[in-house]
Image (cartoon, rainbow, N blue to C red; front, side, top):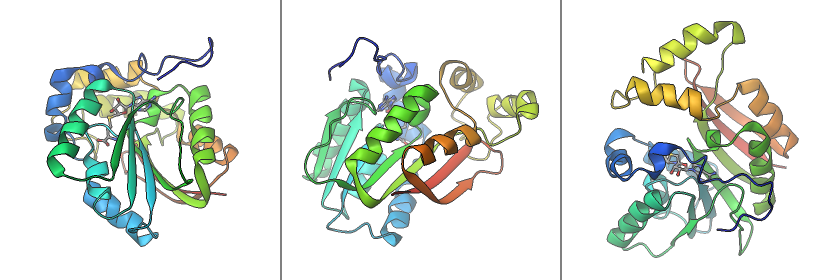
Length: 234
Ligand SMILES: C[S@@+](CC[C@H](N)C(=O)[O-])C[C@H]1O[C@@H](n2cnc3c(N)ncnc32)[C@H](O)[C@@H]1O
């Protein structure tokens, strides 16, 4: 993975401390359920089938990639963390699936080859980039997709009024939110707010539109922390 320009940020440095931590990564699948079956079903309703090619960015341990690969032609599972990728590759090997390519790269460095992607998938990963870099990432995703292709984006995004910050962040840190499993502890939630780059919904949606996507569907958890988007490349 090469750092093309001197002004480029280092995606590994921003990858999230825990995603480079062997103990966390080994426990990850017990801690976090990516609801991959449900996600793949949703994409199938939008035409994801045996001819489709999908790129997943921030693939982690491969919960989504492994299920997606059972119904489509090609999955490219991209992640910056060598620790996550090691786990993903082990699972791919055990599965016997031959249509998953694991690539160590990031939103800012992955170079897509082959035909333009029909689908792109990313869950709980884009928030690792500060907003300026999110725009570059979204632009790069748009370029790797065919016109009309679908980008499913699910991330921690703040959907509340800035006047409510103290109350809402306290709720998040106490892991009382709807989508947060109890395996996550307060210190990890505080670390997310402090060291990662989740942004406000109104900022993210402006970036999405600026980068050539139409918001076809959006759904937020009632606690206002998790945004799930269906974006169409136009
Ligand atoms: C919370 S995990 C989510 C993993 C998986 N998508 C899931 O839903 O279970 C975040 C993942 O994003 C990866 N990541 C962080 N920054 C990234 C970047 N700039 N480019 C690609 N992946 C990145 C991390 O290494 C980690 O695997």
